[in-house]
Image 1 (cartoon, rainbow, N blue to C red):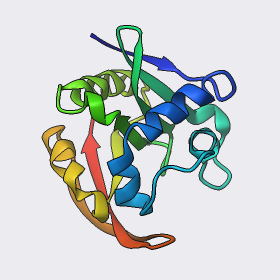
Image 2 (cartoon, rainbow, N blue to C red):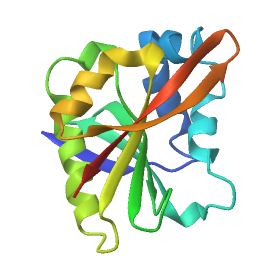
Image 3 (cartoon, rainbow, N blue to C red):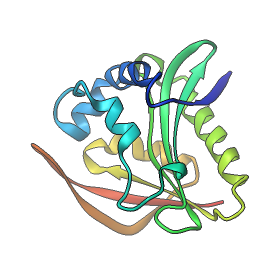
Image 4 (cartoon, rainbow, N blue to C red):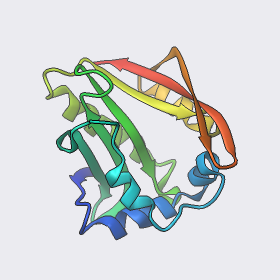
Length: 165
């Protein structure tokens, strides 16, 4: 059974870092190199310009007592009626067992309790296109929007997906 628990940026930073490092292929796909030492702190700190910290949620995905993944979620971004999934990541050793889908279902249940939210949104970096099928199976649709993506040696685009809830 999957449970979500909001992570604390101080007491849970080491645990989140271990999750990020346990998905090296993801890091290679979007960064071009393994996760850096401060990656977890960056997940907690990353916010759009002038976005309220109170509307950012970083959840741990727990299977039993084990932290197997994480979700980064913004309430009210990019519009007041949208929620944006910045990251849903499962440790590679736990992938392929339905945990990502179960975690997404929990997030979707949570977002449905936010009465102002009508749309879930996310971006898929094309160099990590392997996850696109997962999101399409969850009911997301590709939009016509794509934005440039660059991180050191990785030059790509972010495909924007949306789902009406």
